[in-house]
Amino acid sequence: MIAMIRPILIHPDPRLKKVCAPVDDLSDELRALADDMLETMYDAPGIGLAAPQVGQLTRLIALDCVKEEGETPRPLIMFNPEIIASSEETNVYEEGCLSIPEQYAEVTRPNAVDVRWIDRDGNEQHETFDGLWATCVQHEIDHLNGKLFIDYIGAMKRQMITRKMQKLKREKARV
Ligand code: NI
Image (cartoon, rainbow, N blue to C red; front, side, top):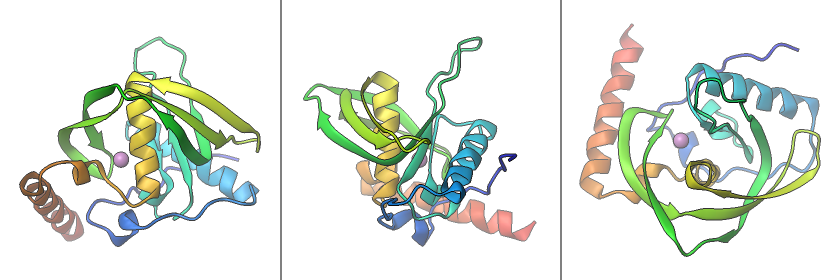
């Protein structure tokens, strides 16, 4: 089966504010969605994508934080990802989001997280992530709970970004 690039929802959209439903049966349809999400993420290009960003309110994320040219990619698909422990030590990254194009803000998050998930083959996985991977996986899991990175920043900047996005959507709708 050939993976398909799906349209990415742009904030503000009510589907980006929903708590997504857990997966209890890993179907071929869900695997196809996961493959499409990786394809869509690489095409964007981005390092992470959550199912609600393509309009599917399912607990599924895709990520690959290998950014260096020539390094082996590491595509990860996570169904029902859960943070089971977080470090006290924090890290600040300038975050962006494919649903909030060209807008960035510094967000403070735990520097390392233990994550448990179900992989594409239905096996339970567990790994500790740190640095950019930790930030990315936390950002993507937030999407499954209707939370965006702009929810961590000041109200003024958030409103400014939201207005920019509303304008961008109006412009897109016109063409
Ligand atoms: Ni995002």
